[in-house]
Length: 124
Image (tube, rainbow, N blue to C red; front, top):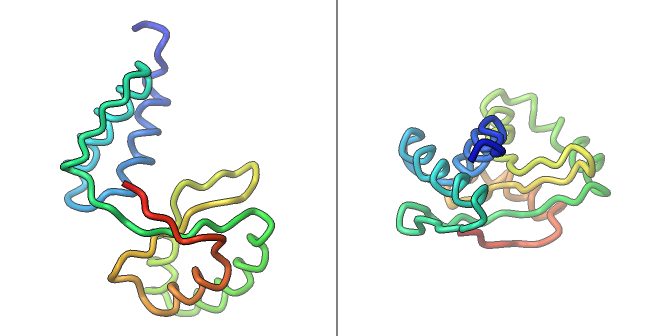
């Protein structure tokens, strides 16, 4: 147990919690359980607390094109905040990320996701 990096587990829990729906304290509690289970190599996901969401994966090769189109949306502060909130699982080495596109997603962001997204995925 002493070899487990608690800071990495907490970071992973926040990563997982961003993809869940509901109150953040409850999402974080579920995510912490999952992160500890992953660290112990016995993944037991509490699926009942997790909601499915749809996302588009934007590959690193399309990141620059995505950025130029996203800058047009940044003139509207609400869309800028919404877009920044919807970018999840950012991989800084390859500059690839997932774009959360739930039902309440603004149409401008949905069009951006469809244009630059590699594929439509469903995560649990």
